[in-house]
Image (cartoon, rainbow, N blue to C red; front, side):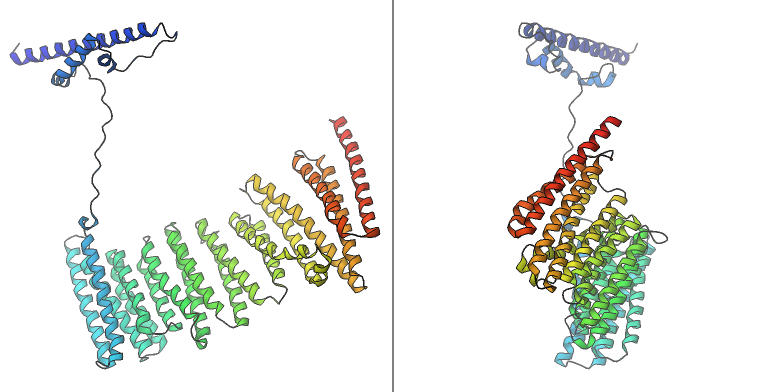
Amino acid sequence: MDPRDQVLHLEREFADAMQRMYTVGNGLARLRVELESASFAATPVPAPPATSAVTLGSAPATAAATATAAAPTALATTGAAAAPPAGPAVAPVAPREPWYRREGAVTRVLAVAGAVVTLSGVAMLLVLAVRQGWFGPGARVTAGGVLAVLLGTLGTRGGARDRARGEVVGSAPVALVATGAAAAYLDVVAVTALYGWVPSAVGLVGCAVVAVVGLRLARVWSSQLLAVLMVAGAALFSPVVAGEPGWLLCAILGVLSLVGWWAGGQRPVPRLTVARTAPVALALVAGSVGASDQRLGLLAVAAVVLVSTLVTSALSLRRHPAPVAELVAVVMTVVGVLAVVAGQAENVRTVADALVAAVLVLAATTAARPPLGPLPAAFTATTWASGAVAAVLAVLSGAPEGFVGTGLLLLALGQVAVAGATGSRITLAVSGALSVVALAAWAAHPFAMLSLDLAVRHDLPVAFIDSGLAGALLALLAWAVAGVRGVDGDVRRLVRVGSVGGGLVAGATMVVSVLTLTGARFGDASLGFVGGHAVSTVAWMVVAGGLLLRSLDRPDPDLTVRLGLGLAAVAVGKLFLFDLAALDGVVRSLAFIATGLLLLAIGSRYARAWERRRRSV
């Protein structure tokens, strides 16, 4: 055995000895703890960790631990015995790298700043030079075009060199191309909107051509930065060059938005989506307060922008169902379109709001099913809600005075019917919100029936019609909630209870309004008013009795019993708290007698039915 083998043999034996000493030391320490704690508790003490041998001052354990620590090389080399497991190692937290040290960060910042400054200079060249009279329009446009070609050429060559080396195109060529394309776009805007040298249609085609040529490299280079810089730069300075925010500026920005969507290609580009949509939406809002002679043209552009935004958003969501940016685009566009519609003449405004609502509802319906859908639920919900808002605006602007609530109730009825027929929870949620708005508008009618003076001054025919519609809406809403899958059970019960209560209030309002109106026609509105309330109280008690009797035939009668008892309590409370003061003479007496007899009859009938049911079981 050579000396090296002897050394290895001795190391193994030393390691074995250290392990045995370590085991013996821990055993002695554990035994000492058990002996000391036996007089205090009957339950055994759990074994202490390895370090307790040293803590308790056990000599063997201390020696073992010291020896083990003194021979880490032997244990690691031989692998004959493993050291006690060490605690989890905590990785040191790397200091956060400053943004300016990240790869390409400084270059991108300088590129963006350079593009903004250059485009500002182009805008000054095209606009401010006019005010100062520095040189003629032809020279200004020519200078802008030469600068655009020069920047585009330099950027294209730089990008080609980067691609030839197999590298990603750098920020500098991207910024040059984006600046040149945006400058060329502003040049066409100046020729079309500022100087009027070409017809508007030709100018819009020119804008589309320049945008396609400039943004084509964004697709080829797969550069979102190029597309965002070009679109944002051209959109930012187009209002400066074009002047007033009319229909032509909105069309120019709409063309830029559409081509910008094409530039995004097959990838999700949320920054580009917002950058191309926000300018045209803001331009629509600004144009809505402009000259009245451009309102119809602005409305036509707004319609095209709305349809194109819905289509492009739907197509993007089919490829990449990440809806945040697309939803922002849809909402901004709808806000701009509704602002334009609000600036139209009254008759045009109503029709336009109705058409916008129809387009949005059609988009939501199409998005929820093949062949286009199903798209993300958030898109469907957004378009449905936007369509509901437009429909409400159409009712508010077009309904005759006094029939706004009627229009809202009819609109809510249609929405709830669609929700129940399609079984869509999104449609049900939107129609539920619209129903709340419609019922809030209807609530003025029941309050008017609390006093004879208010009832006489109120529009009783409208109250009768609206109350009938409200009752139908509540019944339809309960049916829709019961039929749509996935609705929480508590929500179903809440809607059912609310529908019963609201339906009874609507029925009472109908009775009081029609009898008050009849009494007024015969010269005694007071008699009709008190008679209507008396009939309503008795009718509520009849419904309460029907609910109680029906509960005996249901497998789960608790909710029906509670409804019946609650309604009976409400009817009795109304009798003593309202009818006693509001009714007069014979009518009050008859109401009390009829209600009391009904209570007795219901109690007797319920007792007999309950006994028959108990015997049959």
